[in-house]
Amino acid sequence: MRPAPKFGVSNFLNTYPPKAAQLIVTIYGDIVEPRGGVLWMGDLISLCSGFGVNESLVRTAVSRLVSKDQLSGQREGRRSFYGLTSTASAEYHSAADLFFGPADDECEWLFVHSLHQGEQLELTANGFAPLGGGMYIAADRSGRPLPGTSFRSVAINQDGGKLKKLLHSTFGLEALSIEYADIVQRMNKMKNAVNETIDGQNALFLRLALVHAYRNIRLRDPRLPASALPDGWPGAIAHRLFADVYGQLSFLADAYIGNHLLAIDGPLPAQPPAVHSRLKSLVERSQVL
Image (cartoon, rainbow, N blue to C red; front, side):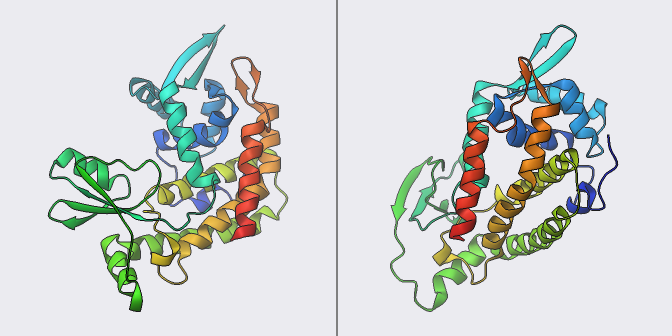
């Protein structure tokens, strides 16, 4: 490994080193899924070592992901390769829209009534907030689970900011706002650091750190329509900065991937159509925002 740049992954991540399993999910989501879903174990170990995660932790995490039917192993000679299962690949592909798709637009609301604890846990894990009495509310986004009795609704009266105030409390937006403001600050520092001279490996590490940190917040965002969010919502700023910084890092990062990382049938492609599509979407999103 080459020396890290002045601004490295440890400057960006709140928890350093990150947890092995979560880092591997980030690597497969950012690098591997849009390039066929398979990566040589040796490359995975090298990538994780750039984040201070040792080989033993990587192998343990991979074994657990295999047992959870997220990864499957195959051998080619003396080399081991791990690919996403069909189920995991579909999940990763769907989740990619949260990061590389368009900004969240206006939408209606979902209400679900359920008294079943398992269903309630599923609802809160997928963007719903409890209203009491077994009622849950969420923005009407694709992929939301709808157990129990479900309703779709439209907000009729939004005068005086009462709806914003209610939703701010219901969805716990204050804590999320603080986290978004923090990552915006860190993204700005990374954006300035990208202007320094860095090589492809460091560009890739910084991009992985960017995705890893943003993913931790974005997956917990209830994705409310803009009309229901507080003025100056830092989530919108973070969404734009993510697009900007990811795009800045990608030329060098993708070139490094194409020159150094292996799938079972040869080098991973630098910028296959799925990657081009991601980058194009990010450019379009930056222009809209």
